[in-house]
Amino acid sequence: MNAELQALKNDVKRFIGRKFDDTYVQKLKNSDDYRFKIVKGDEGQTEVEVRYDGLIVRKSPEEICSEILKNMKESASEYLGTPVTEAVISVPAYFSNAQRKATKAAAELSGLTVLKLITEPVAAAIHYAQDRLNTNSTLLVFDFGGGTLDVSIIKVDGSMFAVKSIEGDSFFGGRDFDQMLLNSFKSAIQERLSVNVFDGRLLRRIQRMCEDLKKSLSFRAAHSIELYCLGEDANSLKLTMNRQQFDTLIGDSVERALGIMTKCLKGAGLTKENITDVLLVGGSTRIPKIREKLTSLFGVNKIRTNLNPDQAVALGAGIQAAIFKKEFKKLEKYEITEITPLSLGLRLEDDLMAILIDKNSSIPKRSNPNICYTVENNQKVASFNIYEGERKNIKYNNLLGSFTIDNLPSGKAGDIKFEVVFHLDEDGILEVSARETSTGKHNKLIVTLGEFRLCDHEIRQCIENAEQNKKDDELFDKYQNKIQVPNALIFKSLQ
Image 1: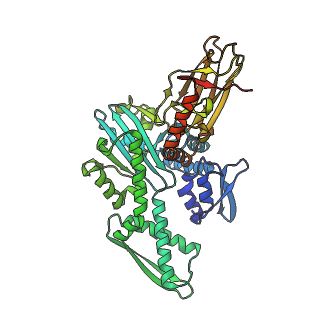
Image 2 (image 1 turned 90 degrees about the vertical axis):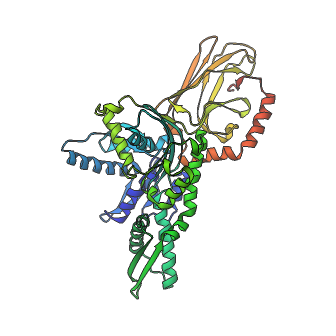
Image 3 (image 1 turned 90 degrees about the horizontal axis):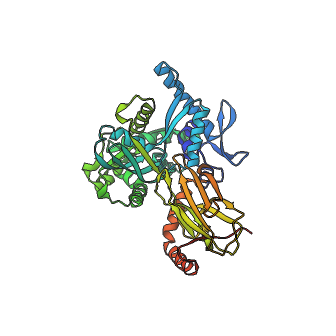
């Protein structure tokens, strides 16, 4: 496999299911760290161009993932001696619904039937808890892999696995540490030689050495790399880095990871004292600095190092597959509940948002009926606008869709009443229904969140923006409440 294809295989998960104009796709597109070219597809989708056998090949992330899965399917079929046609596939917890749909499409393109998409922290938790189902525990899964960081808090109560909070970053992983090392060594080489000796081949060689160095420093005090035949003078260099230097280099990034973990705890309304077990998942959790920080925060007795960080997710997904095929009796009765990353609600009069399903609510979720009233005499049409987000003012939130109920009976403003109900199912499909109570007239909107859902970066921005503007929102809410009909959700008619 050439270097471009290898780089693409390692990084494709970072932009699957994203549009070309996504903030992070643009960041990737303009970065010098990637050896493949990111281009815009005919319908605004993300595609990549790579060189293969002397040709320029254009593929979508879904097509690339399907080729990877097809290769895995063929390898598994050969090893097992029987065709593999079904799969349970793990995805990062912070994947948007659109990214999950794209992953499922890639699997189907490879010829696999997807039994279930399971989040990676949940898969790891299943593997860890398979022998501990009779105990109550609160797990913090710190999943730090090569490309992504996911932190999830999962409550295990007998056979119930309930996700309480998720935070993460789909553009933060061990690969970023490799890049930091590469940049550090590039600077050191330039200082010593005073000439630019870098070409694509040399950079790829140094990058491979940086990855080896990172792994080596997990169990050694220092590591050296040696480079030969550099530049026209065929210079040779030996560069050494010790663990303390490496810790300093990645220090800010480690704090960034801990900040994500702290937000996850806050989202669940928990403190570190409430956590019973910290599961270290993903190869980057082998880095001593990360383990030291987590041990300092939670105490040595809560850190679980008896899981293989590289295999825990795959083993948990394997258990899930066995359950589907009725081959794992011990866990047949277990249940998993996932959560929604943003609040869902309705637009009120004067642009207030009424939240019907809160952020971090377990799904499936059905809201209680909410009573709404007309705002005009003899109003004939009522509109219902559906939003997701954390701001009080709907103009800062994301519009998911809208629908109307028309031919309303005559009546004074406030006399005509509606019941509105939200239902969010296990697959992330939101159904909003509204019914006029006197006549029974009703309508509904089915919103497939995969088509409208914000990407993980935008989700984080929504939450952070709400936190930063909390005081403004409280003032906005207080002001609007003074001019509204008390205790009523009221909607403008469409003119």
